[in-house]
Length: 236
Image 1: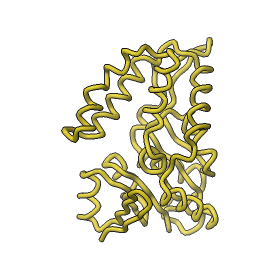
Image 2 (image 1 turned 180 degrees about the horizontal axis):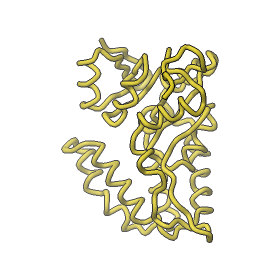
Image 3 (image 1 turned 90 degrees about the horizontal axis):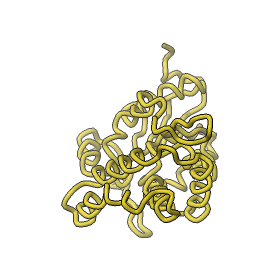
């Protein structure tokens, strides 16, 4: 394997998307819209209702809530038209493209000017990520790819699950394929699932981190940035 920290090659910046750039979750917005348009049954929300309530009342974690939404989505995607899926993804991005955090939005712009290769790694469906990230100038997007059949309907299967479940593996793959370097690299994430790729970059930034990532960041002296309302805090 070649040296990923070689000095030749374009510098890379890696961003998680949900909760890091987008001020919500693209998957949550997608599931809500699928229910609203009656493509999903209203009963689908029952799968994550308790987890949502527990998170709102700060009795349990956001991670449990989002995993319940993922479960609801994956249990009900089978036989849904890919055409409808794309249409709804475009609809969401049209209305919510600018629902972003100022700090990370401006960081992407700054790094693009410096000729960085801007990489998005997320567990949201790739179709909606492509719509969202394309408008922000990302170079490449990695997200979950759900299998479709010859009739253009989802089968319920998830492709390349072993790769998409490991953000560090994705980063290494992108560096190899795109002739990039981790020298001078930057990574931005918001939860413990991002630690694996943040450990690989020269400048890890923990943006609005959850408790597990915050504790890890403090113990490893990583940069912590918090944006609340119109104020950005750099925590020591």
